[in-house]
Length: 599
Image (cartoon, rainbow, N blue to C red):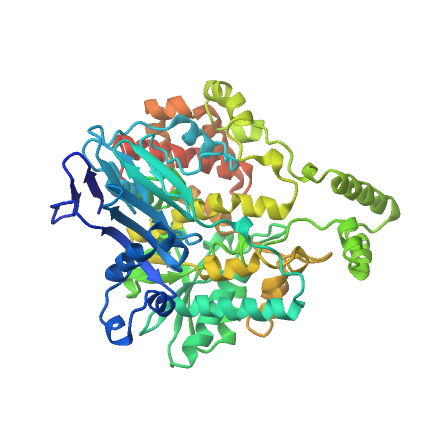
């Protein structure tokens, strides 16, 4: 459902099956919202509501009272996963706001007749009459180039449609918009006085509460479980909480296709089922479910996601498993799915890179010695490491060189398009990287962009009728992590220390201590090979698409497809081909030349 606000006629319309139009009232009102509020009791107390009244008040009425009491300052008082649309009668404006850290989506656009449209679904806005459909060339190119430094990350693939950023509220008046930020990662100072045990204890207290607040009030819970720290910690803490009530966690794990189960790739864990099974065995109330998606066509899964979301990035390399996951979760009767997708930038942040001189200044003598011996086995190597760390210490910006377009990045993109945009990408479309000299600055500066990127998962889940909820992006948890020194996240031998220390006795030791990373799309080459006829069909359509011809280097994409068929390994051939195919499918869906029923 989308909402259309006509400022000139002073009315608003809900574009649902039972479409209704109402006048904009003379007083404040809630035009739309989605909210899971974690601090309801605190909020009611601040508003002076007595117990007899609070039991009967609806969430919508509570939000309206909060706005009438605090106006836009209300956004600083609400904690949870939420978006909110308010009609401010005094300003004669619409205010759209999104919480600071969850993967919440809210899009907006102006129609050709000057009406404001907004919705949690991009496709609902696209379906409104009068919304321009023209693509945003630079934004499309940023996806093709995997240009994570693109400055305007709230711009969608469509020129007319933008996304509301996390921790912001936008004030809309006829033809104008004013954006305000009400929360920033940089506002939190490091608490140096605490001991490591105190950091971990408070983190675990907040993290447990974040998991509990996202569990269903009755029945069992569903969780996405890989072999990693983040999803493992969420699933284990959920199981601990539900055990007291004799309830279960249904944990879903991806299993690669048969031909890829024994693949080996240094530094990666390609088959996550055995490690996930170890965690499930630790908790008797975890029902572990293997999702084998051999029977699903990966092209069909990606097309469905593109049709449902309207976003190019929704057709990820692990689309087959995600498609199967959400289908199964919904069929099993769940409306909410727990995940830990934001963990890498919040609870299990790697802390950046160690530096010999930083360790010495912090008087971490043992770690400094271990750092030199662990990283290099001989003295020439240690001297080179010392020289590198000295240069990095003198000029920290060396860790964040100015990004450049490389041949590898531009391989699947039309050469003329790259030539046209290269200078602007390397100068204008950069997220102020020149001012960043520390990994913590990089993490904090990139956080709004990263939370926005996580919203792709929420959009896809919603297409299946599932709400994705992530305790690792909980505001209270992340605020505590922002106050913890880097030394609590990384030492000379390991990163992600905060999570590792907190999970002692809760998840299996191999999972808690491993440095291996899961690679779910490792079997993608085998999946494409099995459905090569579908791939050939799509490539033929792409060769005859004017939009694909404008954006893509079809000769390069075809070459990568031949290479991917030969090796089937998760290498550059495969993933560059996938990026090209992903973009081509997006263009074909937009042109109406393909649907999931065609495959």
